[in-house]
Length: 346
Ligand SMILES: [Zn+2]
Ligand SMILES: [Zn+2]
Image (tube, rainbow, N blue to C red; front, side, top):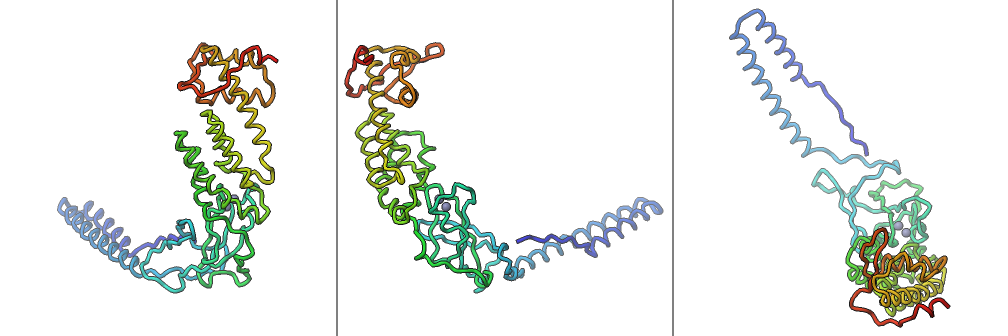
């Protein structure tokens, strides 16, 4: 809704102008005392104007009527909306305390972010209108950017079709937690706290995935417990936990439409490369990072995994050495299989 600001030329301002002109004339033609009289008169008028303004402003605040309902469908009221984990709650921003039956929110219409990457869970609700009680609770997915438009009673265009909630796949209740963690985990610096949040999600993963599977939707493109948890464990060299996390995602079909076998394969490869590299570092403490690539002349994905290990693993301690690093095993040392340099070359 647009606010109209109107400027009125009040009669009081005309009076001021009149006084100023009179004062100026008096000052010119009379003497000093005339200027004093003029200034006093001006002060009195200013006081009266100020009081009038204050009183009229108070009256406006008490008696301004809410705007009439508008049938233009693009002209909905802007509301502040907060979500609990079940249903949207509405706080109507009104300048008046009086409540009118006409102001009762009855319908909501959902709009997605509108870009091409909107997931199918959100996309199914785009532009659909529901009764408030039937509306899908947002967030609808871990990366949800959807918003509700709220409509007052009698404010919807006559042609609006009211959707039936049975015709849609509603996200699981735990989606709100997934949404919260999706950002929080990446912002968190403490790896143990990151793991805790991801573990909380992964326990709920089957429940979270259920509506996706019923609907035949692919798993969300971003899902922090699936995308990061195995990796966090791998940084710590917690191989069993990492594998378990991947397995839980596979069981919950969180890689769908893929089956997770690629992730499992990458994990096995990463674990082997990390174990070999760490073993080398333990046998050659202080060895230079750039020489590791000579000792392990991997290519393609394996080389990337070795790079990743040297960059992120908490099993390795680095000390700056020129434009490379000296590498040491972190203490306490994890149990690993020692592989000799000779064996590696085969
Ligand atoms: Zn979505
Ligand atoms: Zn959404």
